[in-house]
Length: 208
Ligand code: 5GP
Ligand code: 5GP
Ligand code: 5GP
Image 1 (cartoon, rainbow, N blue to C red):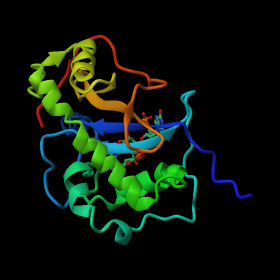
Image 2: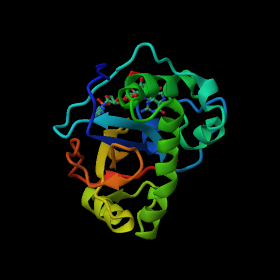
Image 3: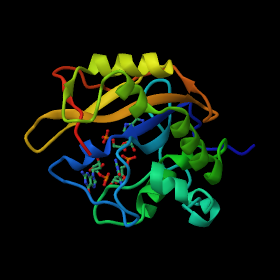
Image 4: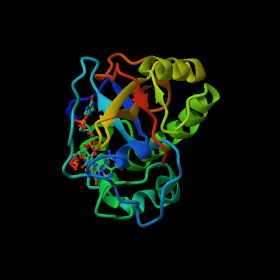
C-alpha cells in the first residue's frame, strides 16, 4: 500500500485583519492588484492534529500551479490578497500556503478544491458584519477579547480564537481570527484545540 503523508484531523481557517497587519513596525505593501477592501481576508486553511501539532510541506512534488486555479484567481485577489512586501500579485503568498499547508490535505482536496474550499468558507461567514452588528467596529476603538469572541460565537455559532499583534507604539490589536473546519474542508466545527489566544488587556481594532 501507498502511504499518503501523515494525515490530519481538522483545519484551522485563519483570517487576518489587514489594518493590524499593516499597522506594525514592518508595515505592509498593497498587492499590485490594488488596496484590498476593508474586510477580513484569508491567511490560510491549515491541516492540523487534535493535539495542536500540525504537518507541513507534505509533497515537494506538488508545486503551486496557477493554471489549475485560473477560474478562482479573481476571487483570490479579493478574499486572499497578500499584504507582504515587496509588492506582488499574491502568487508568493498562495504558493507558500499551498506548499506548506495545502499539500498536507492533498489526499482529500486537490489544489483547485483546496483554494475553492477556503473561498467557500470565507463566503459563508461574514465576520466583519457579525462584529459590526454587535457594535464592534474597525475604528481604532479597544474591545475585550471576550466581547469579540462572544459576538462571533453568537453570530456564527462557533467559538473562534482571537490572536493579537502589536502596533509600533506597543498597543495590542486584533490580528487574526481562527475558526475550525472539518477534515472535508466544508463545515465549521467547534475547535478540538485552540491556538494561544490573546486575552487581557483590551485589543485595538484598527482602521484600514
Ligand atoms: P506564527 O508563529 O506567526 O503564529 O505562525 C507562523 C506560521 O506557522 C503560520 O503562518 C502557519 O503557517 C504556521 N502555524 C502557526 N501555528 C499553527 C497552527 O496551530 N497550526 C498550523 N497548521 N499551522 C500553524
Ligand atoms: P504562514 O507560514 O504564516 O502560513 O504564512 C506566512 C508567510 O506568508 C510569510 O512568509 C509571509 O511573508 C507570507 N505572506 C505573504 N503575504 C502575507 C499576508 O498578507 N499575510 C501573512 N500573514 N503572510 C503573508
Ligand atoms: P514569513 O516568513 O514567514 O515571511 O514572515 C514571518 C512573519 O513576518 C510572519 O508573521 C509574516 O506575516 C510577517 N511578515 C512578513 N513580511 C511582512 C511584511 O511585509 N509586513 C508585515 N507587517 N509582516 C510581514
